[in-house]
Length: 169
Image (cartoon, rainbow, N blue to C red; front, side):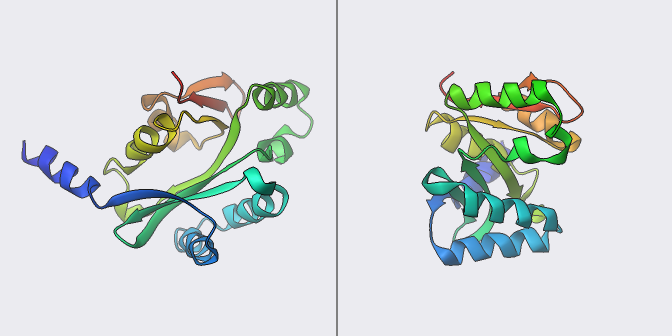
């Protein structure tokens, strides 16, 4: 019982925000740097520059501290990653997802000190499901079981699987 009470109390301090504040954007980039995800900075910049108005930065806060975040966009970043350049089937699958109203979900990060505490599941339950978000994404092999546990399904199987999550279901 004690662990459940601690988890509930812990989640009272966690919030999820769609943001367009420049300071939040820089804080998120700094967090990516701290966590050693320098390649992701490139992805974030590409999405911000080419993603247009329908691209959103969503941050996760513990009280006022940014402890994570992700991007949601209509820009099909995965289509332009080198492993998909010459894969016609992958390109067609991505087009199908876009046609069906899915957004690309990328650069999902929870700060190392906060991982394994239910924050990722909190994001799926409190943001993605409650807002009926339809997303597609790729994942590192370490995170695959987390996504499956939270309702994602493999949409296209390859070396870098494409997953979908439908908050409507």
